[in-house]
Image (tube, rainbow over all chains, first blue to last red; front, side, top):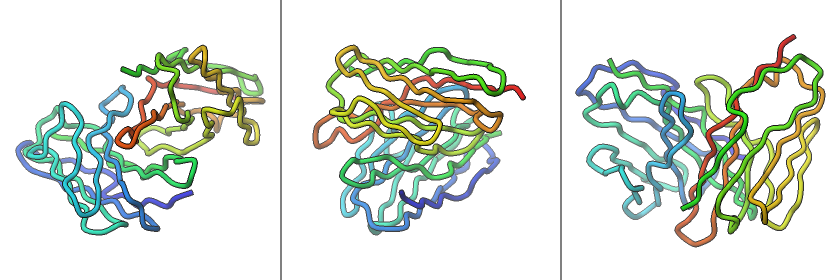
Length: 114
Length: 114
């Protein structure tokens, strides 16, 4: 298994501001993944964070809105910029572990934008 | 494009009942399939991982099966308990170097009544 510490666990933010979410993994991983789960919806991948290179964003997500840092092999941050109420979601980081590439997730960050 | 569907969307059962959750996917070229549990507002907990070459996996009261050719997986929960109440998500992982993301189903919200 993997121990993934994500913070903050929840936050209420004013529109127009930015929030940075942190994800710390208990051992080194090549890729870290950031997902969004909108209310009542399933999870959608935002981007893949690689150490030493730019993050790879999925269709519909852009770096200006969701800048990602990956300073080392155990840590990543996702920033939600210039927030609007539509950004209210649960944001989750994830890693793949082992030869079977089992996915593990952090506890999630529940964001409410008012 | 891979699409994953889960039926039913919601299920309510009395305590002690055995139940089956269903997951369907449109593209049978999967690397693995994983079942998760999500408590309200929280992250995901991995329950079972089935490789594409496997037919089933078991953990305690849980048994997951995979029929890749028909694009189906089932999660069987024996002797359900109120603590099993949660949303259950299935996700498939495809092949390919850049295709490390998981495609998630829509989820089944399970309520086990005491």
